[in-house]
Image (cartoon, rainbow, N blue to C red; front, side, top):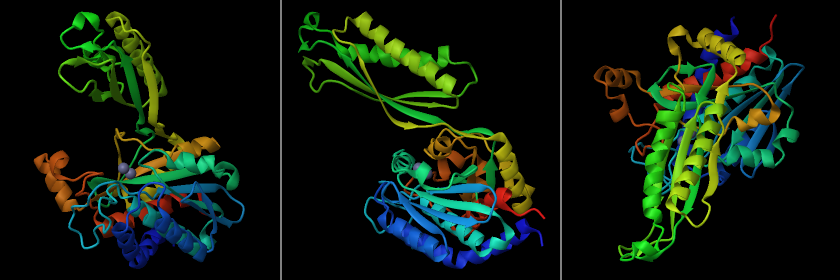
Length: 410
Ligand code: ZN
Ligand code: ZN
């Protein structure tokens, strides 16, 4: 029987243990780098299925299943929850105040476990090395780096390709893939500009950092509108401006927090150059007594799929789930730290998105143009994937994508 067809049926049988485990993780969400119970549960499952289990970066877990000579495939799931208070009203809602799996990472974990068990149960169907990697702290962009800093690259067999997925508020039962950029690079910048403080009644004795910050905010709007190439994706948001505390004192500094999203490293460095030039120029124009300071933090790398590997994975999805279930997705403006792992090995990767909204609800929202307003998205306290359909597809996708590289060709 065709491997991909039997996979679809085989995966459905895994739901009997996956659903209770998913609900258990959903009830007990854990924040980044504190995924202790999740990590222990994952390690126990992997060990029970014959995986060689290793730990990196505190709560990070890797299971290696060597099954003869062949390619190496690394599949990754993130495990962390968010500081959100759940409002879904689900019977398996979070029992931890102020913490919720609002980004479906619990679904990612259970789906990857399902694929790992499927591969362990069907060793006759493939050859090579399957590496299931469970990463902490995706939401803070710290987890993949923490695993790498703890010796991940030298501590596991070198894979040839890496795979990852994300549950999104699109139609359950569908998978979106694309070659090239699928998630943006994200950068946050803290900018401190200096003025000279004075009494509010004596502006002639001051260099006013409030006026300086205001002109910087306005001038920064020209980076995307006047400098980057029209049609080239770029977002620059000033998310915070702060200076002073009272009405009658001119403060001596102002702080601006910026967020950048880009799909190309060239555009990213063009924007950073423009931002620094504008800030320095405005400081000079204001007569600022001290150079501005730039601190780059919460940096997420670009997620850009290898074209050849994406074609192979997309073909496996189409073969397994049918052409109607697979569509070409637009790149998302969100960001991820997954690509640091394949980048550390210098290997190609494929990242895809899995739908989670019951089809009738999703289609009605599309018809009425209310997808953006009525369908709770990731990080919303109301975000709750349809359990059965999402888990089935996410598990099948991880297994099918791995077998696209590992399956024995007779
Ligand atoms: Zn998230
Ligand atoms: Zn996420």
